[in-house]
Length: 232
Ligand SMILES: Nc1ncnc2c1ncn2[C@@H]1O[C@H](COP(=O)(O)OP(=O)(O)OP(=O)(O)O)[C@@H](O)[C@H]1O
Image (cartoon, rainbow, N blue to C red; front, side):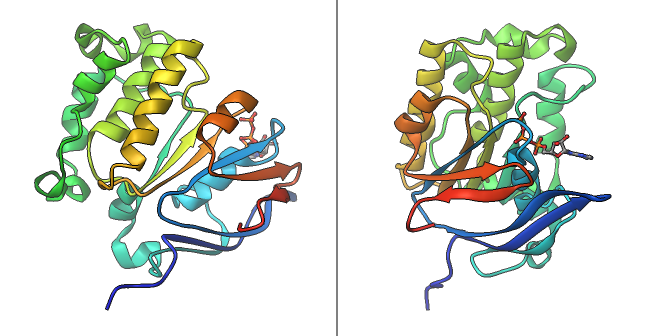
């Protein structure tokens, strides 16, 4: 029998660092087809919340993917399925191509490729967003912010496996035309009934929020929900 559990169920998530509360008991369900835009002032806890959802931060409360805990999937596999894409890649050694080769060997990725449909590969995808294929053979440290951002995003999207994408200001380093190109691709992928089922998208741009958001959630300082759509 098909599961009736929400795609992602977030229950009373809280995150405390020392005496500081970063996230305060946040609950919502994410359903298939949602592009939930997460907004709030700098430091309100948006990135922290996404990292909790990807099981990259220690948190209290519960996150369930189709009714199952991250541990039931195995954490590496869960992090592939509920994938956090940072605003910028942290300091990585060597080149994007070497990094791509390494992640393709991860056990959590194996078996996914055969089941995937016709998404572009990461290099072709980045090229369609204006990143020359030679960029993949340059050192990460020599890439511009916008190049690094598009390459990272192309890897997250162009290697199938993510059912939920957690995007942390994915176009913050891009010009408006390129941002719109990336937005259109992501929204097309979300609506194409392939592996990707939902997106949570952090942005500081009201125009972008309006273009991509199907639902909206806003945080205030201390990681409290200050506004949520009626159905959140
Ligand atoms: N590992 C950590 N240790 C201590 N404090 C942290 C840690 N990570 C985040 N914080 C603090 O938690 C708060 C929320 O940070 P977070 O990065 O989640 O905010 P944000 O809403 O994503 O901000 P921005 O819009 O500027 O990216 C900030 O005050 C930040 O300094």
